[in-house]
Amino acid sequence: QGLFEYGTLGGMHGNAARNMIPVKNYTTSTWTIDEEKWKKFGAEYIRETFPGRRNSCWACQIHHCDMITITEGPYAGEELEEPEYEQFASWASAIGQEDVASAMMLSKEVDQLGLENNEGGWVVGFAMECFERGLLTFGDTGGLDLSWGNAEGARLLLNLIAKRQGLGDVLADGVMRAAQAIGNGATDFAIHTLKGNTPRSHDHRNRWTEMFDTCVSNTSTLETWGGPIALGGTPPWNDLVAQNLRDKGAMMLEDSMVTCRFNTNMNVALLSRAVGAATGWDFSEAEGWQAGRRIVHLLRAFNVRHGVAGRALDRPSARYGSIPDAGSGKGVTLVAHWEEILDMYYRGMGWDEAGKPLPETLKTFELDNVVADLWGDA
Ligand code: SF4
Image (spheres, rainbow, N blue to C red):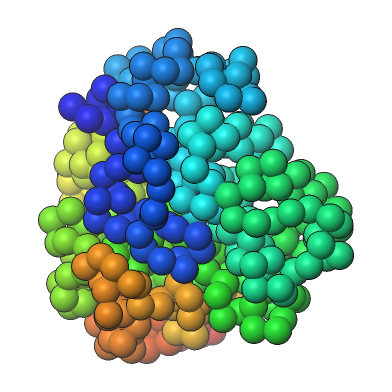
């Protein structure tokens, strides 16, 4: 009912209750915000205050992706697509910005610049922490005030990034490479996997299933849902890996069929029946899983061949894997078990200890033509 009525608008309050929203570049896991301002990030307030018109994808009944108008504050009158949870998280808590309408403005700005909201939020939050620590000065920013929560500062910085001007030229390479360029310890608080991608706008230190999946994924974002609700925020590491292995392939099958996650819900039985209905083939659920997992192995093989996957890279940066100050992960970190986790995961996937698909695995998934690329004449 929540998703059907409100899309992902319930995400800010729901995730904050479990310390899962990103707060000021992970400097804390608890967002301290005035109660009245916080209410405005609730689904009901947004729907009541910012009138919209339905803009859903074809035939979709879910109340999602409305076109809305900002009705309060300095950006009143602007029309935009209603932000998702991750856009609100990126342009509010992740950068310490407390005004819901300003978060909407930044979400629209990112869309218009052709950038991505999760990545944008992390890179702006990272720059704000650099500014707070004195690693970036007014001289570096061209006079921009990058204090936490400065929405106009964030907007101008996003424009510099999109145009690769000034500091924007450094930040346009993403958090990992920007931290390496800035130096002076900036890599200590840069949030990314060691492949270089940033996570979704959550505090994954209290959502281990997603941290693990983001780190081993071949797509720079989630590859497997992993069951965070069923397992809890910080489950035993072997349960987490087992569930990831069990679900592996469902998202890939769904994505390859270009259906919406919120409608087909990674239901492999349903998706397989849909393949049969559309093609007339006798296509079983087992074949659906086989097709989805084949995609995972193929993506992995591609990334290994291009040097962007493997044991050294399938892991979080220091800040990404750090210990949070609140939530179910308080005082602990999944990183303590990372080598055992990778061992279990690689074994379960049929990959070698370096994270490379074994020849017999590739052949099982009818990827015989890929074997020579990875293993020569094996
Ligand atoms: S199809 Fe998916 S993305 Fe499109 S409006 Fe429906 S729920 Fe939203």
